[in-house]
Every structure is written in C-alpha cells, then in structure tokens.
Amino acid sequence: MKKIFLFCFLFLFSINIFAEDLGLAKNSESAILIEASTGKILFEKDSHKEMAPASMTKIMTLLLTMEELEKGNLKLDDSVNISKRAQDMGGTQIYIQAGSNVKVEDLIKGIGIASANDAAVAIAEKIGGTVENFVSMMNKRAKELGCKNTSFKNPHGLDEDGHYSSAYDMALIASELVKHEYALKISSTYDEHINVSGENHWLVNTNKLIKFYKGIDGLKTGYTDKAGYCLTATMNKNNMRLISVVMKSDTKDNRSADTIGMMEYGYSMYGSETIFKKDDFKGNILINNSDLKEYTYHLDNDVKIIVNKNIKDITYNTETKLFNVKAPLNKNDVVGKLTLNYDNKKYEYNLLLDSDVKKASYFKLIVNLLKDLVTGNVRK
Image (cartoon, rainbow, N blue to C red; front, side):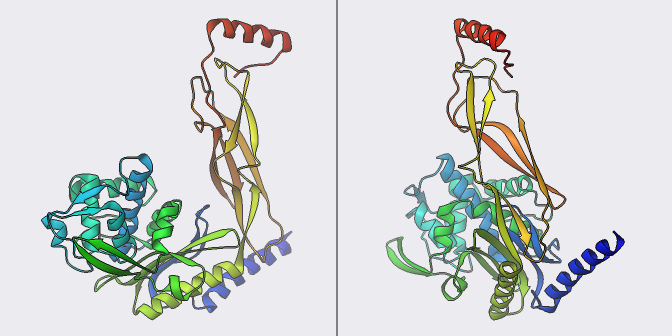
C-alpha cells in the first residue's frame, strides 16, 4: 500500500515538474488556466495576487450587459444618448460624440472588439444610470461569483487607486461570460464596421490570437503602464472549453506565447468525460398539491469531469436531492440538485421542471389522496 501511495505521489509530482519544465507563463507575473464549466484549475502561478487588470475589466462590463439583455431590461437596438463624460474618456475610443445616439449593439462591439473606453462608459451609464452605480453593480456581481481579490473603480480598466483584480478572479468572471453565446460572437469577431455619431468606424480586435491561433474565440486583452500586457483568452476543443489568464507580461508577443503555451498544455494533458448528458438525464418528482401525480425534471447542464490523461483510475459519485416544493410552479423552476463528488470537490447542478405545475383543486386533492391510500404511494 505504501509503495502504491509513493508511486502516485511521485507520478503527480512529476506532472507538476513537467509543467514547470514547459516554462508555462514564464513571461507573466501571474497566470491561471481553468476548465470553464467545472472551474477546475489546470495550472496557476500566483493566481490570487491583486494586480491591475487593465481592459480585462471590460469582461465584467460585458457580463453585466449580457445579463441585462437576457433579463429583457436592455435590447440591442436600444438607443443610448451619449454623455460628455463618455465622449471625454481617454485611451482607446470609438469617438462617440456627446448628444448623439448610439445603438447598444454598436457600443457592445466597440467594447468587445476594439476595447473602447468611451463605449464602456456609455453602456455603464445606460445600465446603471451613473458610472458609480454601475461600478457598484460590478463589485456586487464579483462577490456573487466568489471573487475575493477584486475591487472595481471603473468600467473600462484605466489605472486608478483601488482598482484591482487577480488572475483567478478574472477567470471566474470569464467563465460566467462565456455562457452567453452573443458575447463569444463579439469577442471572436476580428474586424467590423460600425457607424456611430454619423461616422463610419473600422473596429479591429485587440486580441490577435483569434485570427492567428485556430480555436481561440475570445476574450479580452488589456494594457496600461501599471498592468503591463494582459490577456484573458478562451478556447473550445474536444468538448472542453479552457480559459487562460496572463497578467503583467512584458510584451504583446510574450503575452500571446504564454497564452498559447498554457492552452497547448491544457489540451495535451487533460480531457473531458461526460457522466450525464443534460438531454438524456430524466427523473420524476411527486408534488403534494399538484394537479397531476408525477412530473419530470431534467439537468440544466451536462455533468462532466476533467481528467488528467495520464491517470487511468477515475473515481466519482453522484447524489440527487429533490426539494419539498409545492404548486404552482413554472417550467424550468429548480426542484432539486445533483451533486457530483470528484477530485475532492463538489459540483452542483440544478434539476429543472420539464413543464408548468398547476395547483390541484380541492376535489382533485381528495381524488389524489384516495389513489395514494389505495396504491401506497407517498406524495412528497
């Protein structure tokens, strides 16, 4: 038994040494590589260090924008009246003019493709009413996502006292953003023409890897004197989406090299195995005061594990817990949780109703009760 333990220890130790020998993120002060759906860390280097995030800040700006679109509080063709504050933003711009009206869609393209600071301020004012209110929303959302080393002071990322994040926190925010297909559509666009304030603008993506490295489809670059060269990148391959973050690299080329190195390491060393497909996983729940006796539920996402390709024996277990819910309920309401225990961590997935659940009439309740007494079924 001791020999087996020693072998496993030495094997895992050799994997870590192998990662170091590859020179991963050697040009960056901080870095991380995670799998997006599980959050599993595949590599990290000082990933919790608080650092200036530069324009990677806009990942949170875009996330809040996507969520407002999803809620219906914002529409792509909504018109945004541009303020003097937005017009006067420094750094990268799309040169929107105060008093003009710009579509939300064009502002999103300005942020996601060209990293425009003026567009970030305009969208912040549209959503939050003021930049300050929007920044409060940013910090609140960061806490909800589990970010512990992040404090936003603005929606664009220009250096400011007290404005910081970490590679780990940026990866957390990015893993939420990539759930929105429209965000990936924008971040994977290399160039685009938009018309703002009466002028035609050619937007070129600041992330050159989306054109020159096959598979990378986002997300956001960053640079200031304080932050150095930064990049949060993402790539989907072999049923596995990876997210990498590098912070304070010394040059653009080294920023790209560190990103590519981590991606290649991740896909060469790790793979994805699906435990349950969300469309195939079905279950039944009995609801005490419902019109029908039984209702079906499904998973909100595929349940999968990320495995090291060099480790053959994989152990995991799953547990399903149904809640004591009552009618009326709506389709896709959460009625339980599926917990996956793997690699000393717990991953939770929601169980969602397949249909609406109507509350039973008193007559129907009596009929159901009589049926239960006859059949011996227990209604939860």
